[in-house]
Length: 63
Image (cartoon, rainbow, N blue to C red; front, side):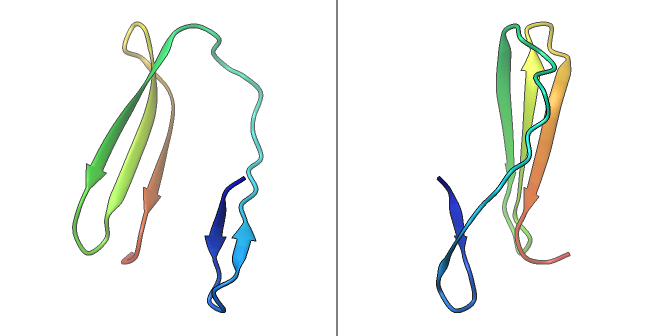
């Protein structure tokens, strides 16, 4: 189980709604990280062919 901290410093469980499986073959996760005042993490799922089959991005702070 994962969680994030609330302002009163209490753990709040994370929930995620998952979609059905779209790809069942080999895949590779590529991760790009950007530092700075608004750091960013980009995660892509790549098929064996190199085609991007899914992705998400996480940003912290800033806009």
